[in-house]
Length: 114
Image 1 (cartoon, rainbow, N blue to C red):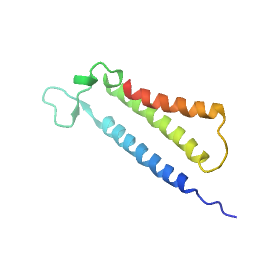
Image 2 (cartoon, rainbow, N blue to C red):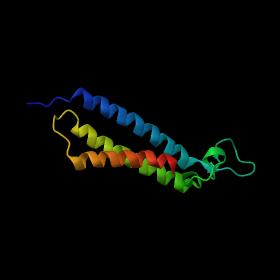
Image 3 (cartoon, rainbow, N blue to C red):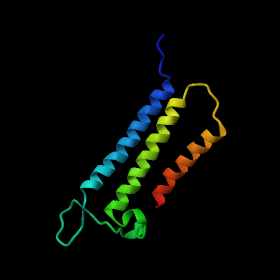
Image 4 (cartoon, rainbow, N blue to C red):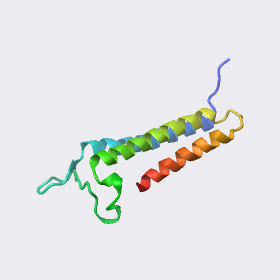
């Protein structure tokens, strides 16, 4: 007997792939980005941000930016995969399971403000 994929799992997997893909593209572009120096071309990035992002740890250097982005990507993929695997099973969530998902979501969102 074949198991059918629940529509909620298919939609969840597509959303997870889309969001993870966008985050990955940003990281790949940042990986190739060079710091702006006098006479630098248009493809440079001003590490050590100016304006509203000035003073944020994640914009202080390329390494910090990549670490923050990588951590967000790992959290998103881990929590998203776990949620997709649980979706449509009809099982109730335990307290620790709810706590783990809420903690992962809070960590993901808090990394935007780092």
